[in-house]
Length: 241
Ligand SMILES: [Zn+2]
Figure (cartoon, protein in one colour):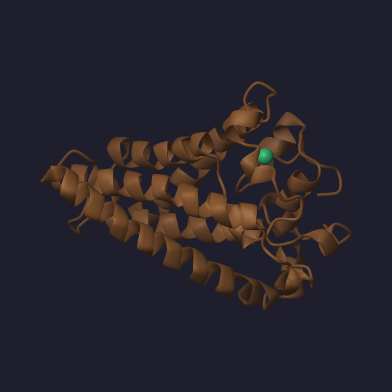
């Protein structure tokens, strides 16, 4: 009975993840294009809309989405048994949600930086991260294209969060949406941007397609996920990013 409900939950979440991917890939490029010039670090290349997604990235993205769907199903079942630290009742102070939101992003950014560097080690790269780097010029599909090992590690972080950190369920949903949207933004084609002015303070501290696109062009630099400070502190920032 439990297994049947786990399977049906996984199927339902897989459909939701597929819809999320299609909606974000369709919506993010025109939305980002509307950003003012001061945020040009996130402006996609003019070629972005004609950039054809690679079949490899689509297949890997669809394959690894089952790992996230299964992880989500396990979390929902565990939550039903009262095993997670998710908070469903209102009543928390208003300032807690934004604080939790930023804290989880900072935690993920920090863990991802270390893990990302490890995944580029020659002993790990082939097994964990090669699939994500198949495209030197990424598209929205690349954002969710992970080898099984990397997918398990990334899903494991999210499962760990709900079991260890007291989070309001609305904050968790906002985090999942932000993480997914930011992943698509980071994988917009940066080809035309590498020479873009880099003086905007936002672009100095937040990661966008220029920063992460350079990582796909020249792996070994720009390992960060959301914020540039770990790359700056550890000396791995690409000078032109
Ligand atoms: Zn990488």
